[in-house]
Length: 195
Image (cartoon, rainbow, N blue to C red; front, side, top):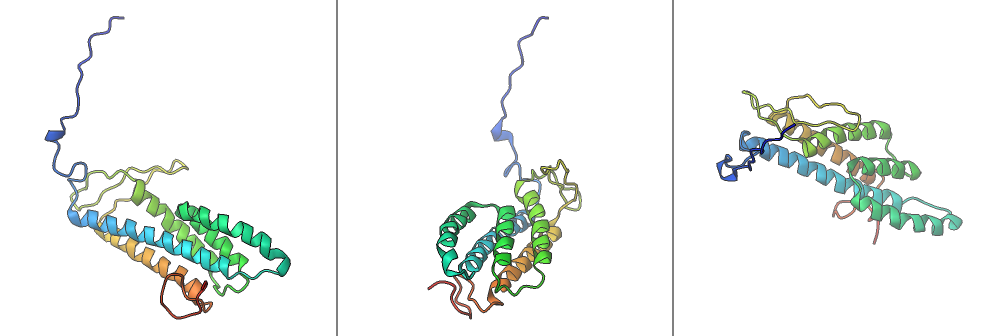
């Protein structure tokens, strides 16, 4: 077999449209996407603070305190770099381990958080395709179960997801403040978790 000399090319970056590869969507789309992704980042921070609050206020017997403390600091350090899915799991365990927790629908909240985490992964890691005539775009995203995301997303969809992420964030905060604790790093009512 004779191999011909290949025709070699490189991308002419100066010929790309302004803002490539985000040029085809309206600015409003990207603003809504950015706000939604930022809201999920805030939800992660709130989960981290809730983990701190629940683990710091869990009561232990005298003979359990030293061992609990030795596990507490590494748990908090690990949570600092955990992604949303792991934070949800750690948060759920922290709430369950705290016998003073007052939330009655923890499993519902955890399921809602996990469902939101799935869409968050699409929004953060999807590769956005060209929008259709209605401004909807199906991002290219395949999860670990090899499921292909196929839902068209537009500004309205993004705004709804962002609003839902705010609701979830408030629900997590409420799980701390409902117990009478001040949410960490806030000046709200309640007893400070740590002085």
